[in-house]
Structure formats: structure tokens, C-alpha cells
Length: 312
Image 1 (cartoon, rainbow, N blue to C red):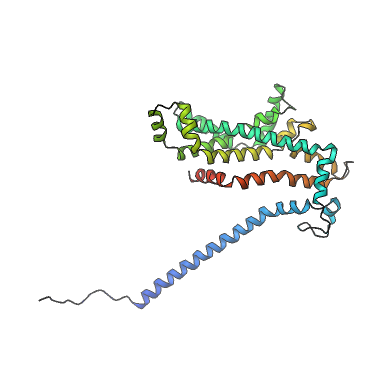
Image 2 (cartoon, rainbow, N blue to C red; image 1 turned 180 degrees about the vertical axis):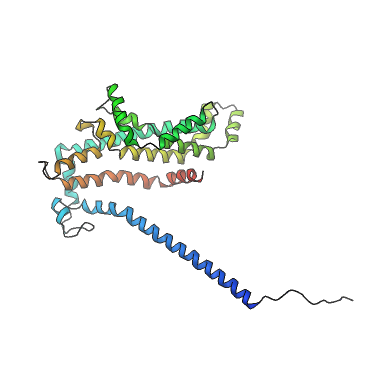
């Protein structure tokens, strides 16, 4: 005969159940407050970064008088939409020299960008997958170079280029832009995470040499990081102002950044030049369009490269 014993578990007190529910509500409210705060911060950042681009778009539709006394204000369009006239005048002013400047910017950016990417891929892969004496010391020196602002190196670079007779040539812009310490760092970090050593060892066991292992096994896996480094190098060279300003004087060799600066200097009050503020603003707007298109079309690649680098 089974003996029944009474349960000794204490029943849940209503006060305890109520306190647990209260804690959950407080946590939910706290999490909701954090999300709202994050969204507000993101909205502020979006407005902060979009406002200059919006102003540039609006300003490119105005003539010179409208830029300073337009009816729409600085952030809205005037009644007279002058964008197409500005673009036509931009490419005709001074014999169409803006075409030359734009072509120079493309040439400098993509030549230096591709060269810097190739060097960064090779150096980053070597630092990540090969063991050699002084590797850590060289990489520490490389990280130190990342911390040095490029503007601090312009004058020494100018002196060095002058000694070799390269000032006022295309090489004065391209050669310094081939060095990308941050690109090497990013490629090393990505290579360490994306390519296991076992995969390379398996390729070597199958008889593949070092070059074949690199080009057929490693390189396809590095595609997101390669696109990221390429974009960063191209944008850095495209936006470079101080270096071309210091090493170039021939108007036919100038990039867009320095060329527009020359127009601005001539348009300043008292300079005695023609007032072409509308062309300057329109030229700046046209010059950012290739970068926007490049970032949007290659977004999935460079975001993946930066994400894996950040996880390291």
C-alpha cells in the first residue's frame, strides 16, 4: 500500500511573482530607452554627415548670385534651376581644363590605388603566413607609420622627390601614394582570420608551389579585403590635396582638388579674377559622384572586409 506524503514545496507568493514581473518591466523599459537613445544618436549622425552633401547638391543648382542671396536659402533650391548651365560652363571654362583635372584625378587615384592594393596584399599575406626574423619588429614599425599624419611627411617627401628630379611630374603624386600602412595592417588581420594554415598546408601537400598556393587558394578568399583596401586607397588619393599642392605646379598635371582651389583663390574678393563660385561648387559636386557610385556598387565587399578586420 502506497503511503501518500503531503508536498512540502512552498507555494509561490504573490509578492514574489509581482516583484519578478516588475524587474522584467524595468529591464524592458531600460532596454527600450537604450534603443531610443541609440536611434536618436544615429539620426543625429546621419543628419550631420548628409547635410554637407545636401548643401553641395543644392548649391550646384544656383548661379553665383543665388549662392549668396538666393530665395531658397542655403539648404533649398531657388526658383532658377541652374544646374545644367553650371555643368556646361564648368566643362567649357578656361578651355575645358576641368576635363583635364578630372582625368588626372582618375589616373592618379586608380594607378596609385591599384599599386597600393597590390603591395598591401603581398605584404599583409607575408606578415600573416610567413615566419621570418624581425617580423614583429617590422610590423611594429609599420603600425607606427599608421600613426604619423600624411601632412607631416609632405615636406620631407618634397625634398626627396626634388633630389631625384621628380617634382612637377606624375610620379611625384603616384610614388608616395603607393605606400599604405593601414592597408597592410588590414590585409594581415584579414588573412589571419580568412585563410587557415591547414588550407595552405593541404595545397602544398598536393604539390602546389608558393605562387600557385597564393594565387589559386589564398587570393580568392581575400577578395572582400582587397576591395576594401582598393577603395580606401583610391579615395585617399582622390581626396589628397596637400601633396599635389606641394609637388605640382603645371596646371595640366593638377587633380580636381588643387584645380578647384586655384579657381577659388582667383575668385576671392580682391584677387582680380573672375567670380566663378557657381563653377567651383558644381565642380566639387561632380568630383564626389564617382566616389559615391564606387562605394554604393561595392558596398557588400568593403563592409565585409571592415567587419572581419574589426572583429580581430
